[in-house]
Length: 79
Image 1 (cartoon, helix red, strand yellow):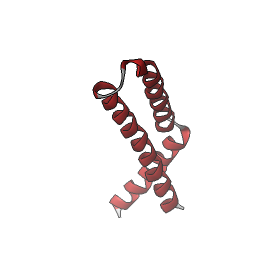
Image 2 (image 1 turned 45 degrees about the horizontal axis):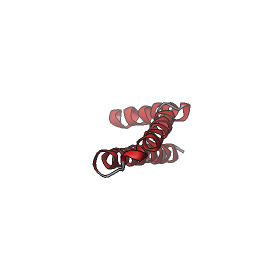
Image 3 (image 1 turned 90 degrees about the horizontal axis):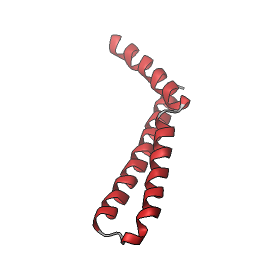
Image 4 (image 1 turned 135 degrees about the vertical axis):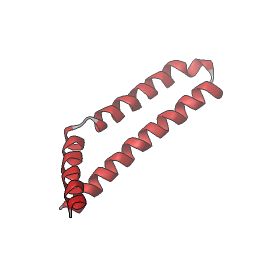
């Protein structure tokens, strides 16, 4: 069960990282190649990705997983 929680925490952190990296790529494209007519759409895309990332990172599930895995890490350090 603990391994499953750690795996879920890792998976969720990777999802968040992928979202943030995608947003960074869109931001780079916006600054370098994107036509001016695309600014409004790009701003909405970046806003959506930022919202999704924030919701996942601050979710109750994330908090519980961090708490559960932190307790396991402390136990392992004491052993």
